[in-house]
Length: 107
Image (cartoon, rainbow, N blue to C red; front, top):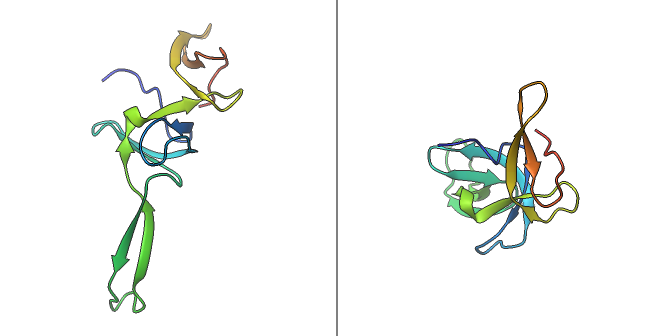
């Protein structure tokens, strides 16, 4: 499947869907499914019945996985969406570069 352009801990911008325009940090990437979890984005609610473990029950709010094509990496300079390219550093390591500003992406 190619190199990982978005990794855990990256700041991303949602490009489409109900949360379009919102930004958040990537909590988990699932490359086999092509999905990821973004903090505070695509929050799903689940109503839980009372059980012996949690006698009060209640409503759980959790981030649901969303498709990776719906997000873009946030540019480190201005926070707007950008594409990612790879360059090989002098020490031989691959580094990610934000196409819009040309700056290195942390991580």
